[in-house]
Image 1 (cartoon, one colour):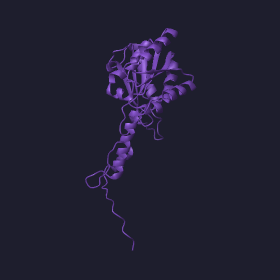
Image 2 (cartoon, one colour):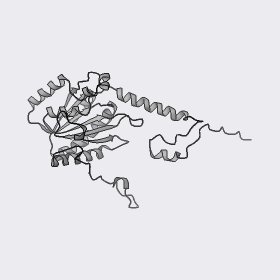
Image 3 (cartoon, helix red, strand yellow):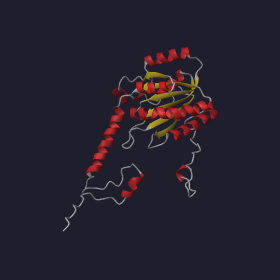
Image 4 (tube, rainbow, N blue to C red):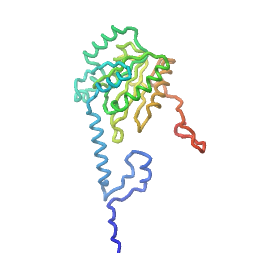
Length: 271
C-alpha cells in the first residue's frame, strides 16, 4: 500500500499563473491566515536588499577607473552633505556642492574656458548599487549617440552624496548648455538597482523639477540602455530646437519595434 503524501499547509492562489508575468508580489497563497514561510522570507530578503542599496558606499574610484579605460576623464566631487546620515536627513545639502568641489570646478573652468554642449553627472542618490551596475554601460550608449550629433561633452562629474538638483550647479559652473544626471533611484522591493536619468536644458541653480525630464527604471529588468539612450537623445534634440525642457517638453520619441514574429505580428506594446 502506497503511503499517503503529506497535505501542503499552503492554500494556493488561483492567480498563481500570473506570477510568471510579473515580479510583483501577487498570488502568494496563504498558510492559515498568514503568508507562507517562503513568501515571507522572500519579502524580508528583498527589504534587506533595498536597505543595503541605500547605505552602500559610492565607489567613485571604480567608476573613474572604468571611464579612464575608455579614454574618458572624470571629476571627483562631493555634495554639501558630509556623510550618509546627513545626506538622508538633509536633502537640501545633497542638492549643492561643498566648497572644495566648487573650487575644483572653478579651477577646471579656468583651464578649459568656452563651455560644453552637454554636462554629464553621475551621483549615488539613494542607490549606489544602481550606479555601480548601470552607469558605465549606459554612458557608452549615450555618448555614442551624443558624439554622432557632434555635441561636446564635459568630463563625467562623479558626485558623492548627491541629489538630482546638484547637476544644475555642476552644469552652470561648467557653462554647459544641457545636463544629464545618472542617479540611483529610491529602491523598491523588487528593484534595488534602478537607475534614473534627469535631463535639463539651460541648467542653473534654483530650478525646480518642473524644468527637468525624467527617464526612470533603467536596468536590465526594466528599460534597456539602448531604449533609454534613444529617449534621452530625442529629448536633447527637441530641447535644443525648442530651447526648453521639463513639463513643456513631452517624450514623444518613436519607440523602435521588435522584429516581427514569423506570423507577421510585432510586439504591440512597443508600437
